[in-house]
Length: 107
Image (cartoon, rainbow, N blue to C red; front, side, top):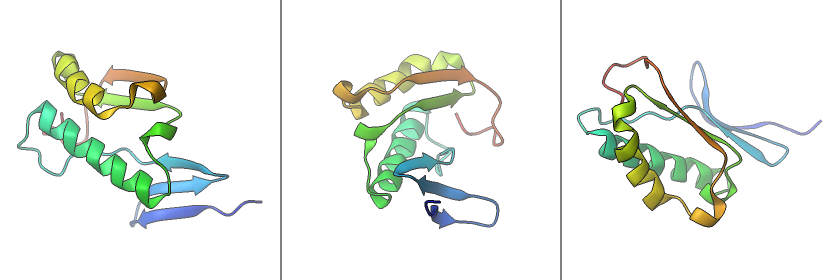
């Protein structure tokens, strides 16, 4: 069986796990909750870039993405940041859903 490598292990979870060359990320949330949706999105995408780099990968290798928003009114603004970050030639399958999050300040 292939070994599992875990990155940034905490008490309850790891920020990433790597198995058979596939990187699995934990849900990423912003640290600065004072920012609007564009700021929070940019911060989270930068965190994803860092985790993927630590794992030896990049956003060009995303297999699937799920985005959770607390308010679908933020969808267009979030997409503006997403579109600027994403290499369009490597766009992954993606779902975007509205839900309540553990911290009400996370957008």
